[in-house]
Image (cartoon, rainbow, N blue to C red):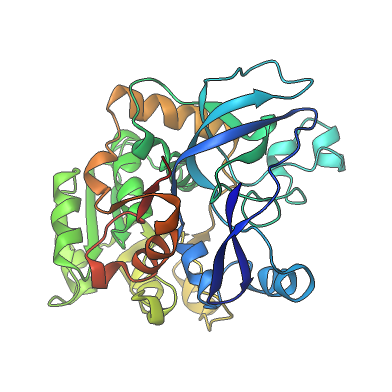
Length: 362
């Protein structure tokens, strides 16, 4: 079969490789639609971010290696021994981070807390191939009301649900979201249906601000021509927001905000409020902890998304309570177009993309 393999950073090739061999508790799938996550796109080009050292080590010891492709919709073609919840023909999506099933947490029925298991696309091959093998434990069925394109966004949306859940939004809270890429727009929609009374969004791209308004933001601030902190304080009577999500930070080489938006998020939240860190920065950063302590701020990080989050994601999209279709701006065709999807996703501002670029594999 054909599969994209990485020989190193900036070096991906479409190779002929043996098809996967079915093993117990796994299924073989035919990928239908796949998108590189923003993290995967950064890693492909050697930009430090989450899992950079792990990927660098794999290149040094295992290259060429099948990597990435954990955001997908696929159709099952064969099920292995011990698989009972799925059958050939089912469309599926998957959570990326899996429990190890061996540690004390997993053995005490707290596998949702486990961080020792493999990650699809990073430790296990993902779906940038004509066929892929996936563990049953990762999968959920895709509702017939959800398109293949929308289904490829479900994994990201499940992470956004986990982020909003971590924030414990109270009824009527004012919520600010820095960054209106895919996860920022997802957090916007989840916050709205989780009790937020007012949602204020921030981005430097006008197309993202317009999309934000379309999907329910009460105010969309263009940070390119506005003093963001001052605008938020004016909208909140000088208090600041109850909850702020920071979804914009990361490498400026990819058009992200660096660490600037984290400082703005801290300045925009009320005393006693919460900042939820969604971004990956790719390295250490300086943080004035006394500043947070003096104002009794809580700097929180999202819990891992579970299978229950992903199942809830399916219900939200199938019922229309969360809209994904408007954010899907770039859809390519054929496995040969995968490198272009990485290019677009790594440079969304340049290409005026909102969601990562998608590849319809068939």
